[in-house]
Length: 191
Image 1 (tube, rainbow, N blue to C red):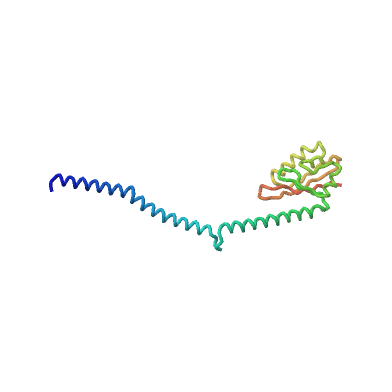
Image 2: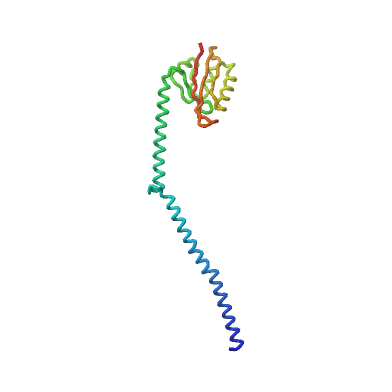
């Protein structure tokens, strides 16, 4: 072998090694990584599948549908309870009305209509305030809104437009320590 052949073999070996390194780096190594990633993907899919199927063997969709049915049943039962309460209070001996969390009237019973019939229609919004003597309304509203904002019992004694003592007593429908969804208020005239 002469020097020219050795140089040619060295060049070919160098090119072959470079080609092998290029193929290893650009083709074989990514292919191995892809296959490893594919195994990870298969494991992830299996984990997701096991999480989606409930312990009873049903699908997550079945569990959600059952939960939807349960929530609908609870909603129907709650509506029945609400209507039963309103029906029981409708013919109650005391004048009662209900306000929302801002103080607007939502509901009232028959006795409330009888007690306030001389004051016109006081069955919407804040119209019940018209029962209170005009000079005392500002003070009444200030105390009422304070009770509503602070979620505390309403206990206000004032005078009606006919100069009779009237009393508002109400309790919040508490849904938390500092929050409510309205009040049930008892209105009565003092003798």
